[in-house]
Length: 54
Image (cartoon, rainbow, N blue to C red):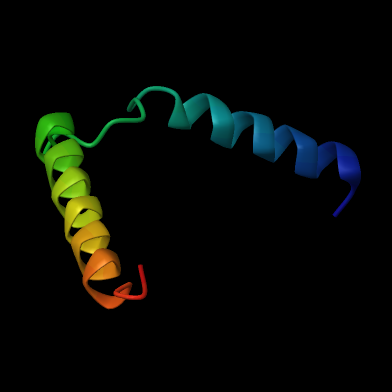
């Protein structure tokens, strides 16, 4: 397999992948952001509970 044929296959693959878009329809940005916020608040609460040397 030569570099030219590999490059041509990669260009074809990249062109086909652009048709579908990058976002998954079932993932809501609001739910993802809200879940990340809750997880970070939980981690902050756990960290402050263990840091009692102040």
